[in-house]
Image (cartoon, rainbow over all chains, first blue to last red):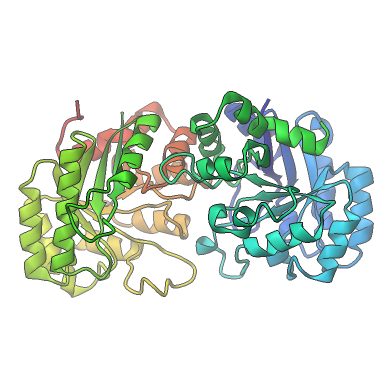
Length: 256
Length: 258
């Protein structure tokens, strides 16, 4: 079983995505051997009212609940997010939500963000460090990477919450690893960017945090899935540890 | 067979070519073993801007790597073209060595700067390929004010259509769609696919605009990214073989390593 914790459906405003329909994403998943994927709306990230993206997602995943695990995109700096959160729980059936502080104009430490994390009790809080490599950003969209120190401060402040960090790299030098023994063990790192050979950041993460804190993700359809599956293939880990990363950790997190 | 057109031997921390620490380079060879990369064309970069003293050390280190890892690494001679006389002498010294296959230019000068012409014209006369560091980022890179981009390299390629010019790392960070479209404006310009960017469709667009006869496989240190994006690309088997090694071997006039 392979579960992808980093997948998307829908349009992205600044670059064509070629496999962003349900059928297209399923073909990509089948090609890469991905059984299930946590999906959110790509369009919602740039919609002012991201709830419309959640509504589009509900329609897109309706016929494929066996493969797609819906995640909501919520903006605590926008009107009536509490109402949207309730809808995403009850109608979308969201198992988690994704936060985009750089795109939505707030910081993870803001009181309104803290309020959302508290209100999202029971949902996995997913934080993409980036959606797009900043070096190739659209000239109208200025969304730098979310500082790993801000994430470390958020996880420390919410012992009860469970966080999955997406699209990060350079973890080994960050508080998320260096201060891991001081922080609650309530966060998991997705490994679509760290390499598994040569620089071998994944090897360092396995030593520092253990396989129980890493989860598989690819970034489809923004990215090819194969670099991520290749990392899984070649990483220096036992099959038992790889199973945790493939699906074991995420299954437990999501209660699958 | 995978042959990488773009990798690096590590600049020794001591600044000495005979530094006994080869740990990073052994890790690179180990990664190539794991990923099935037969041979890697590498350069060793001195801190920039380099000068004749430092680029000679870098190339001595590169030569030592060729000896240490026989058949696994080929070398580019790295020079700063601003030191035209010394750079040309260094290119001649290096290309006389076995498995030194070309020249690496970095970001000391833009490809459109008249200062690079002596080195460029010397490479043209020798038939030596130049792998040229480049990038087109949305925001200027403050630490690389003279970095070239695909427009600069296309200009140079069109000025010297017989030059064997390779645009480095389409996936190295920056607007790869812009880079591919701009590179396509120069019909003799080659490009390598290396870099950490694994955006879906990158390889297919490069094949669409440039063709596999102008595209080279590479990682530039992002090993799983380099191999993975080519593995995932939806291209013909013929185009895949060309990118994996055939185009690069044809450019170099070499046969596949044993």
